[in-house]
Image (cartoon, rainbow, N blue to C red; front, side, top):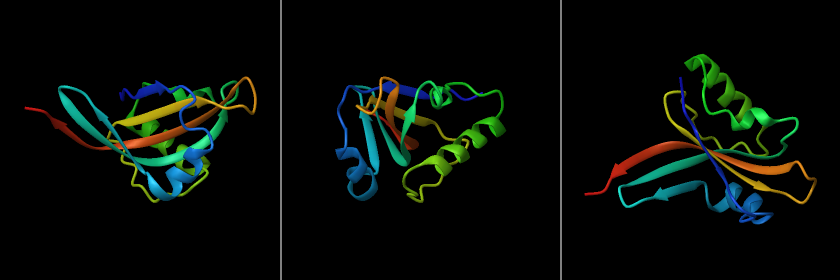
Length: 119
Protein backbone atom coordinates (compact mmCIF):
# COMPACT_ATOMS: atom_id res chain seq x y z
CA UNK A 1 0.00 0.00 0.00
CA UNK A 2 1.29 3.48 -0.85
CA UNK A 3 0.09 6.77 0.64
CA UNK A 4 0.71 9.87 -1.43
CA UNK A 5 0.48 13.55 -0.66
CA UNK A 6 -2.03 15.56 -2.67
CA UNK A 7 -1.90 19.31 -2.21
CA UNK A 8 -4.48 21.70 -3.63
CA UNK A 9 -2.58 24.83 -4.62
CA UNK A 10 -4.39 28.12 -5.16
CA UNK A 11 -3.90 29.62 -8.62
CA UNK A 12 -0.17 29.90 -8.07
CA UNK A 13 1.31 28.64 -11.25
CA UNK A 14 -1.04 29.16 -14.19
CA UNK A 15 0.79 29.35 -17.51
CA UNK A 16 4.12 30.06 -15.80
CA UNK A 17 4.36 26.44 -14.70
CA UNK A 18 4.28 25.18 -18.29
CA UNK A 19 7.59 26.85 -19.07
CA UNK A 20 9.03 26.56 -15.60
CA UNK A 21 8.56 22.80 -15.15
CA UNK A 22 9.90 21.99 -18.58
CA UNK A 23 12.95 24.22 -18.61
CA UNK A 24 13.85 25.74 -15.25
CA UNK A 25 12.35 24.25 -12.11
CA UNK A 26 12.04 20.49 -12.02
CA UNK A 27 12.49 20.19 -8.26
CA UNK A 28 10.10 20.92 -5.40
CA UNK A 29 11.11 21.33 -1.77
CA UNK A 30 8.84 21.06 1.23
CA UNK A 31 10.51 22.52 4.30
CA UNK A 32 9.05 22.18 7.79
CA UNK A 33 10.59 22.84 11.21
CA UNK A 34 11.30 19.08 11.47
CA UNK A 35 12.54 18.14 7.99
CA UNK A 36 13.30 19.02 4.38
CA UNK A 37 11.86 16.88 1.57
CA UNK A 38 13.07 17.19 -2.02
CA UNK A 39 11.03 16.02 -5.03
CA UNK A 40 11.90 15.69 -8.73
CA UNK A 41 9.08 16.53 -11.17
CA UNK A 42 8.20 13.69 -13.56
CA UNK A 43 4.83 14.72 -15.02
CA UNK A 44 2.73 17.82 -15.69
CA UNK A 45 -0.58 18.10 -17.51
CA UNK A 46 -4.04 19.57 -17.58
CA UNK A 47 -6.88 17.32 -16.46
CA UNK A 48 -10.65 17.33 -16.15
CA UNK A 49 -11.54 16.18 -12.62
CA UNK A 50 -14.75 14.60 -13.88
CA UNK A 51 -12.72 12.33 -16.18
CA UNK A 52 -9.30 12.06 -14.52
CA UNK A 53 -10.17 11.86 -10.81
CA UNK A 54 -7.78 8.92 -10.44
CA UNK A 55 -4.84 11.38 -10.30
CA UNK A 56 -5.92 12.06 -6.70
CA UNK A 57 -5.56 8.40 -5.66
CA UNK A 58 -3.71 8.19 -2.34
CA UNK A 59 -3.65 4.45 -1.66
CA UNK A 60 -2.85 1.47 -3.86
CA UNK A 61 -3.58 -2.18 -3.12
CA UNK A 62 -0.23 -3.37 -4.46
CA UNK A 63 3.14 -2.04 -5.57
CA UNK A 64 2.20 -3.16 -9.09
CA UNK A 65 -0.90 -0.92 -9.02
CA UNK A 66 1.30 1.98 -7.92
CA UNK A 67 3.85 1.25 -10.70
CA UNK A 68 1.02 1.18 -13.28
CA UNK A 69 -0.27 4.51 -11.95
CA UNK A 70 3.19 6.08 -12.32
CA UNK A 71 3.62 4.68 -15.84
CA UNK A 72 0.28 6.14 -16.91
CA UNK A 73 1.16 9.54 -15.40
CA UNK A 74 4.42 9.65 -17.37
CA UNK A 75 2.66 8.61 -20.59
CA UNK A 76 0.00 11.34 -20.22
CA UNK A 77 2.46 14.09 -19.24
CA UNK A 78 2.81 17.12 -21.52
CA UNK A 79 6.58 16.81 -21.20
CA UNK A 80 8.90 13.83 -21.00
CA UNK A 81 11.33 14.99 -18.35
CA UNK A 82 13.34 11.78 -17.99
CA UNK A 83 12.78 11.53 -14.25
CA UNK A 84 13.06 7.97 -12.95
CA UNK A 85 9.81 6.84 -11.35
CA UNK A 86 10.38 4.14 -8.80
CA UNK A 87 7.40 2.48 -7.17
CA UNK A 88 9.23 2.35 -3.83
CA UNK A 89 9.40 6.15 -3.49
CA UNK A 90 6.70 8.55 -2.32
CA UNK A 91 5.04 10.87 -4.79
CA UNK A 92 3.64 14.39 -4.50
CA UNK A 93 0.80 15.82 -6.60
CA UNK A 94 0.25 19.59 -6.79
CA UNK A 95 -3.07 20.70 -8.26
CA UNK A 96 -4.50 24.09 -9.20
CA UNK A 97 -7.63 25.29 -11.00
CA UNK A 98 -7.44 26.37 -14.61
CA UNK A 99 -9.64 28.77 -16.50
CA UNK A 100 -10.39 26.22 -19.23
CA UNK A 101 -13.50 24.86 -17.45
CA UNK A 102 -15.13 24.46 -14.04
CA UNK A 103 -13.57 20.99 -13.77
CA UNK A 104 -10.20 21.97 -15.28
CA UNK A 105 -7.06 21.46 -13.21
CA UNK A 106 -3.35 21.60 -13.91
CA UNK A 107 -1.31 19.04 -12.00
CA UNK A 108 2.39 18.60 -11.39
CA UNK A 109 3.61 15.25 -10.07
CA UNK A 110 7.00 14.62 -8.48
CA UNK A 111 8.93 11.72 -6.91
CA UNK A 112 10.58 12.08 -3.52
CA UNK A 113 14.35 11.95 -3.97
CA UNK A 114 15.56 13.00 -0.53
CA UNK A 115 14.24 13.44 3.00
CA UNK A 116 16.44 15.05 5.66
CA UNK A 117 15.58 15.47 9.32
CA UNK A 118 16.59 18.77 10.90
CA UNK A 119 18.59 18.67 14.09
